[in-house]
Length: 296
Ligand SMILES: Cc1cc2nc3c(=O)[nH]c(=O)nc-3n(C[C@H](O)[C@H](O)[C@H](O)COP(=O)(O)O)c2cc1C
Picture (tube, rainbow, N blue to C red):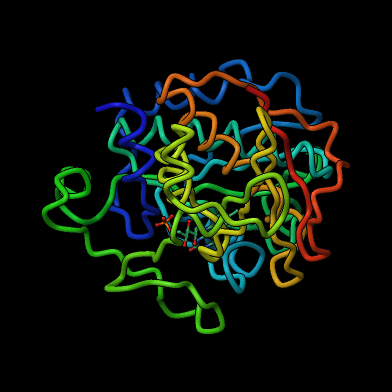
């Protein structure tokens, strides 16, 4: 299985077997949590493995999850970083790498947003740590053969994100599967709004890169990305939405950056994300902000 297939097939898991990770899977996961960062130093960044998921879910209820509704799971990873957008973008990039590696171990996961970091930290005795910016639920999916179904393309797993407690959230789905935008609708050439046809992306040899990108997870499946191709630079813009707050916007941005980098590498295109030089005038509207510049 190559990394690109993981990008395309990854799905959030919200129903887990009542079973702890095996000793081997736990060892592998802990070594991933301690591995050096891909993007270097991130102030306050820390990943904490929560062994007793059911107990944590009770303590964190009301403080994390959509509308404060926790996803019950055998374990969680708690993600901390100093509360600056650049730290959150980088942290999300690091954590999404772990999420995909867990998938290769057949461990399911789901990002969980934080509603009230301070209360969650008090409830869990984490008051010495930086901002709690996200949790990731993890464990073995409840549905039998979940991963082989996911990869077979023959039968989709029974995923239904619209469960009780999410009544006010419009997660766009069809037959229980998250809907995805048309690729060419989120890629512009040179300036905001100058839509590329799909043919133009094919001509530049980057059509497939954006194809993978649209499978990146995002808060409420809002798929908040737009890309502006500026010669050899690709500019990532993220939709601002007061409903979810800046932290989740920054996490969505970091995840998209990770997906983009892996998709580019998968097509033999090397480059790096930069967090500076973002103030160029591309005509980006007020409800979007520039999150990064990928330089080939
Ligand atoms: C920053 C972030 C926060 C999220 N928070 C939650 C959450 O609190 N509860 C939840 O059920 N899903 C959460 N999700 C998962 C998204 O709803 C999910 O990724 C999206 O609907 C797309 O579905 P998929 O991951 O199955 O492709 C979150 C995702 C991201 C990226």
